[in-house]
Amino acid sequence: MPNRFTRVPDGPVPALPLVARALLPVADLFMLAMLSRPATGSLRHTWVTPGTLWLCLAMVLLGAPIGAIALSTGLSDASRLRVAAGVVIIALAAGSAAVAAVGALQRR
Image (cartoon, rainbow, N blue to C red; front, side, top):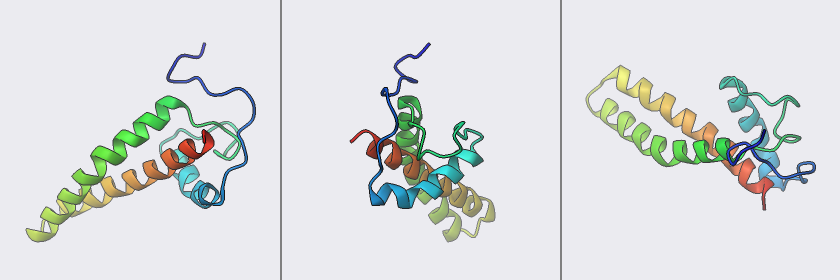
């Protein structure tokens, strides 16, 4: 039973603009890495749910600055753990940004 976090528009996913098609491989790889691959195998044919869209936006807005701070402080004090954490967090934020962009462009 759909709710406000899982409800998607009726009908097929519209044709995506060139920008979204360029981001699709990154978004699909991110969804696969997060063990959240759609049944169709690609976001080209599957709607991004509102819950996923909002979680990805939150990760971009909160994770990217945290990752940047971790990376910069790790580089300044030569902490390999902080550098690694910063790189991982920034990579997660980049994948989230790709999914959020595809989801937003699906709804344009």
